[in-house]
Amino acid sequence: MVRTVRTGASAYLRYGYEATFGDIASETCTKKFGLQDTVNSLTLTHNRIDLASLGQVEYGTYAYGQQAASLGVGFTLSNPWIFESLLGTPTVATNTFTFGALANGTPTTPKTIQAVVGVGGSATDVTRTLKGGVVNSLGINTSIGNTVAGTMDMAFGIENAPGTVTTAASVPDGTAQTEFPYTFAHGRLKINNTVVAELQDVDITFAQNASLLYNVGTNQAVDAYRQIFDVTGNFRASHTDKEFLDYTLNQIAKGTGTTYAETIGGTPELELKFTKDGNEDITITGSGLAPTDFGITGIAPVEPIFENISWRIKNVTVVANDLATAVP
Image (cartoon, rainbow, N blue to C red; front, side, top):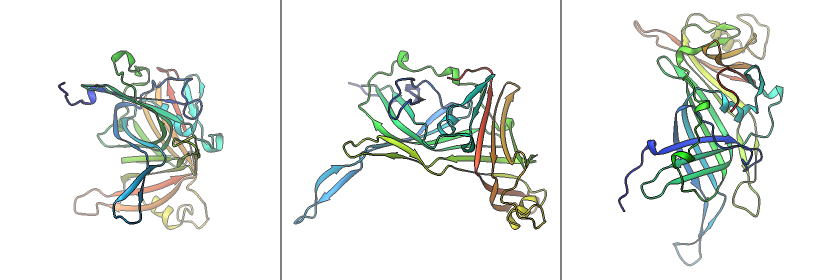
């Protein structure tokens, strides 16, 4: 039998949310992460335990521990549905979808995810279904001349025997969740209710630090739990004044004054918004904003001077207007 190498043209990637851990009976994997979705990494381990023996230098026996899989995905942001993995099921009103902040009821247990990766083979097709998954981190970033890129790191506690069918009829369509891509030209960043001028690049990372829970009696995970929800980011913009330097020097004392304040303040404190048109946008709003560090680059002859600010927020809410698409 002649075997030929497969390319991404023979593959597909979809995901869906589980009703209960490891079970997606109430929904199929029909969602797309975004445009130009890419599997950056897919690893399965059974955590082999190597056992040595007295009287010899070779390993004597192997045993096996927990089954665990990791999936890394890259994509171009084109829809908001992935935020459900971090902020819970959206509330819906007139096609405005609100993914709530921790202070507004985000579950303390993670929303588990399931993913299907299919590859058509020259000898045998392979369809892998990863269940009982948690999103470790979601990153959103953009810079001048680029699209709004997303990256996701996920861990899965269950993978059963693979299927062998990846025909066109079996590939979920997912086109209802794929729209026009967001680019840098659609972006805007506000700090303390003021638009950051001459923004060069910006990124935000959501880390829910979720973990899989195992149980004596099975090598697969049986549940998941989340720990501290950590939202951080940074941006680079023209160095036009000393506002952020003051924030850092004075440990968030307002301006050059001496009145202590824990965070920068303002309404909103942080707002990162991507707008395609009047009917489609994604707004990420954060509160409890505090800078982590302040840096300057480009102090050289005839070079532009930029400031680099990294930061952390306590709470975040995502609101998406998407009049062209119902909740998938």
